Amino acid sequence: MVVKDIMQTEVVTISPLATLREAMAQMRRHKVKSLVVERRDEHDAYGMITYSAILRTIVSEEGDIDLINVYDVCTKPALIVPQVMDVKYVARMMISQFTRRVVVLESGELVGLVTMNDIVGELLAMAEESHIEGVGE
Image (cartoon, rainbow, N blue to C red; front, side, top):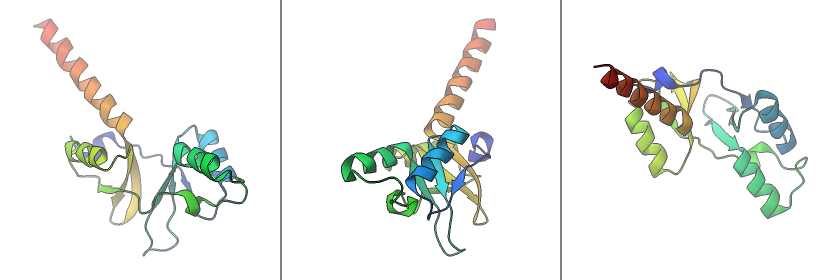
């Protein structure tokens, strides 16, 4: 199984210049827990901002969410994988790097996102499927 088989293709992005309030509103509107931070140009890297990073910033900095920008808080560069990479290697990378999501690029362009939940969900579905097939025999 490769990344393109399980990746989410509907990826919500945000400008690095947006405020944390705008990022939180975008997350709420799209019902997601992270946003891919857009590149400023073709030589820039994609970033990632999560609810956890925003919450950590608000608590530790006692910051005003209208004065702090996404680029101040986001993880950049985001971990990037190609859509043809085997999912087992993506899972290993996520575990070793202590991350729950990776950005999927094809020819330098954003094409998807893979989360730990996507991988675990697919593994559980495969396990259920093989269990059902085994019971029927």
